[in-house]
Structure formats: structure tokens, C-alpha cells
Length: 417
Image (tube, rainbow, N blue to C red; front, side, top):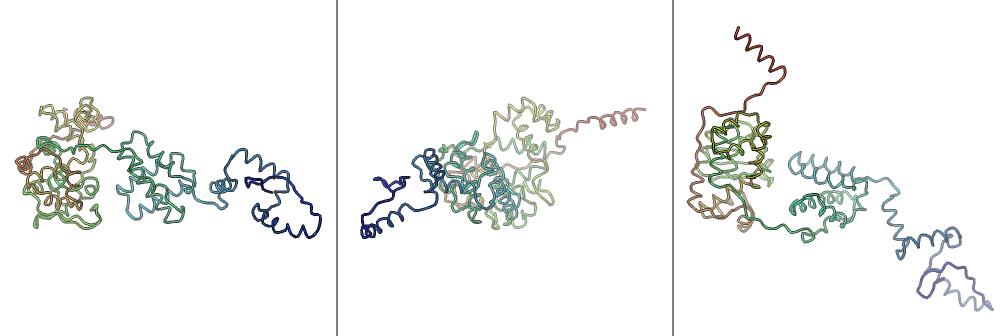
């Protein structure tokens, strides 16, 4: 039966009627009450009643049916894949569609962190928006932009699960930009005219094999992260003064053509372009760090001495670490530097946007790529920097160790004899 508040009272009750007519008259009321309260054998089982009362003491005002739904959600009747297994399928699908490029690496890293953060053994439909938001905001030492990147990666993962009916909704999709810390606007950072000149001269003197790779970015504005890893010599056509980036390499996944490049680009290309193959040399990262450091040293003799050290030894030196800390390379420096000086020279964002293959508004171009404070004369000077090849580049010397050192000494003794 029900109390005044409409709640079920666990008490047997058998009404008494003086006549059959009275009993028949009360039958509709009993049937209506039966439909409202439901029925089941547990109502007449003392143990079931005790279980019900004990459960209600634990869950409070929560409906028992909601508790049952929550329990079944986390303990499905049929075997279902958990998040860790689904991540493996997701990454395999991304690799098959896009290959192991930067996008794949980003998803593998960021979604991997998410799954490792106590979510791997969870069923995807049990994860809430608030849990994802708390995770994203708690990523260690993450800047606001990094938090947004983590949220985007997790959202893409859940969209994939949504397409494959592992979830009925994407909880990450409800996380709005305003829910995350604001990313304070920073002034666009770029390389000064002196820095660019010193950097290119250092590359010529200490590692000419890297020059073409750098010039394509500094003087032609090609994207560093998205395109340079697969940028080939065959993309550049000096006969027609064009650079053609195929769809498989272009960030936009569509063939793109760059023309209208400055004369000094073609002078650099003629001097340093390899005959064929990729522009990015092997061991590019450490070699790039080496050039950046050597370019900051004003004493050429000292720079030459350091340039002869093996790259690993050079980059471990305390004074070198201090240089790298004191003079960090600005983010997206080459493309931003190109944009800044090109607009300064031509006084036209539209002309620069065509070369950069930038499809956004001119406002976005100025807001994301163009630095301030550069005159038209400085822009002219930037595109007048010409190659000055070095006859004998200063390269790292090989340090012999172990058996190789012993053989070398034996050879010296033999030669002396």
C-alpha cells in the first residue's frame, strides 16, 4: 500500500468487507493501487524486504531502479570492449587511413595519456563529461593551448566510438572553450634580420647539407611541422619558378602551388639543393640544434672549435645549454619570420597569403603570423640575403673509442716504423 506521500509501505494489509457488494465496489481501487505500486514475489519475501530496506539506507533518496541501471552500465550482461582495447583499434584505424604522420603521433600520445589515467579498464559509456574536463584541466604542466589539444584528441577518439556505436553520445563534445583556462594572447615572435643572417651563415659554414631544408621555410614560407618531413627536391621547379606540393604532403590534403617567390630563394636553391630525394637530412634535430647554438657565438674561432666536437658532446656542454635556455627558438619561427618580412616588403597581406597558401582572413594572418616593428627597408634587406658558400665546412670530428682507437694507434705505430 502507499502512504500519504505516495511511497510504498512494506506492510501486509487485508481489507475486510461486510458484504460481497462492498468488496466488489472496492475492486477498482485495489486494481489501480496494484498498477501504481507494481507487484512481485519479493514484496512477500522477508529477506527481499530486508535487502530493500538496507539498500535504501545506503542510497538515500536515489531510486532503486536508477541504482540498478548504474550497476548494469558498469557490469554489462554481455562482454564489451573497454577503453584500452578500443584505443588500440582506434589508432590502427587512424594509421590505416592517414599513416604514422604527425596527427597519428599526437593522437597516440594524448589519447594514450587519457587512457592511462585510470580510464583504461572503464567501459566508454560510463565516462562522463565532468571526468574528461577534470582530466584535461589536470594535465601536468599543460598550457591552455595544450589542454585544448588534449580535449580535441579525446573528442576525436569518442567520435570514432560514436560512429561504431560503442557509445550513444560523445561526452567530450560538450566541453566548451570557456570551460578551459584562457590562453593569454602573446605578441608574435620571429627572428630578427641579424639572427636570420647569422643562422644561414652558420648553416653554410658548419652544415651545408641542411641549408636547402631551412631556406625552403625561411624564404618560401613552407610549413615546418606538417610538410617538411616529406618535402622532396622534386617539388621545386626552377624552370617555371614554382614549388608544387602534392596532396599527399600538403597540410590541406590538396595539391598546392607556390609561385611569385623572391629571386634570392632561387639563388639559394641553385647553390644548395640536392639532386634528388628528401630535403630533411638524417639526424636533423640535433644538427639543427647545433647550428642554432653556433650561430649565437660571435667569436668565430671559438665557434669553429665547438663545431669540431661531436654533436652529442657539444649539446651537453653547460655553456651550450645556457645559450639554448637564454635564446630559445620562437615557436613556428621560420614561417612567422617569412610572413613578417614579406608583408613588410610588399605592404600586401594578400600577396603573402597566396605564397603561404593561407585560406583564412587577413585578420587571422596578421593575428597568427605577422610580427610588428619591421620596416619596408628591412623587408627588402631580408630578401636580399644571398648565399655565400664555404669551401671547407667545419664538421664534427669523430672521437675514436675502444677497438677503433686501438686500431688507430696500431696504424700510427706501423706508419712510423
